[in-house]
Image (tube, rainbow, N blue to C red):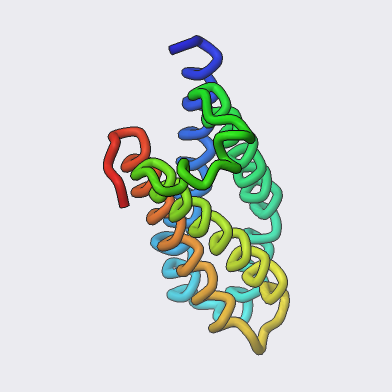
Length: 154
């Protein structure tokens, strides 16, 4: 294992921790605390302002995750020719990677939907559910990431 690979994996894990940790904190602490606030009419603008302020961190984390994910594969010897080979996707690692990539794609789609609807008061409930879905899907991505590095095939 090279120092570059360890650094890339470390940055990948750090970005995932920030991404998932922030969503969990928002869902578990921020939103419930604000819902109990005495000044109910101030809650929605506060949630929007916090989300808007954090948005750049979330998208930066996702970008870092994509870049380091590709780097991690490359440093493990999985290059474009490997990814284009059908037999690779028939292996346990290939199948697990395919499932992980599918969940990552869903996370991105759900996050785009969440961001697009976040300014709409009449879509507040849908936006909330999309945020929760992004969190659950992201936790699934971590499960598949652990399966990849531990050799479990899904």
